[in-house]
Image (cartoon, rainbow, N blue to C red; front, side):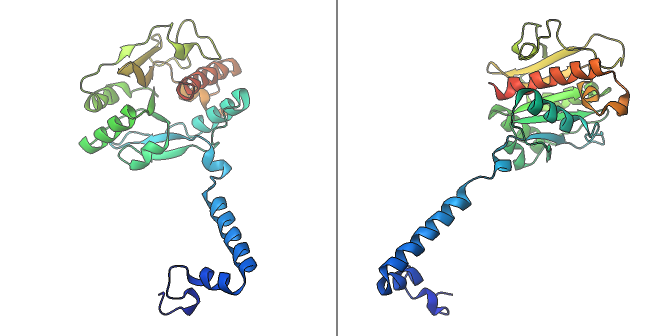
Length: 245
């Protein structure tokens, strides 16, 4: 292409080298414009600079896409209540995708079956060890499927119940008794379990609580404003805990 286009000349200097020889001032201005353009292109846009939360897409037939209004509402609450500056639109990411590493906080939900391939389990493990965070919210019926799959991710770890003194319950909002009860499910007390890798909480599993339902639009489940506020405040604690580490 260089030989076919005489504007660029035969040398790497191309048209800029020729221009400088003809008119030094013109050449200097051209170089300045090019440098300014390069700097502008390298600057991230405001949207790109915003941290983004992602929804985890997984196989097995379970409804990974449940509660479609929950994450946008949680993000809006975090931005309005605590000025977190999160991207208002959550992403969707496959568990086996390299794109997983673009998101510091990944949320997983559903009611049914979950299957991770060996490659997907390894990818999720690498992501969590590298500094990522996974919040699993049991939308009712997820536990029996997701716990064995997370064992594929961390065969050496078991979920442990977090004490009520854990910092995740004590960010801006105080939850001295742990997770709030949002939906009845089996009428058991809500539990918060964690996978801890080398002293760091990498996965938080909320069970018998259903925070995601509480984050949804009010007319989806007809939850009271007080119930929705408890869910959103606890959710913001989780987000604040992750981004404040």
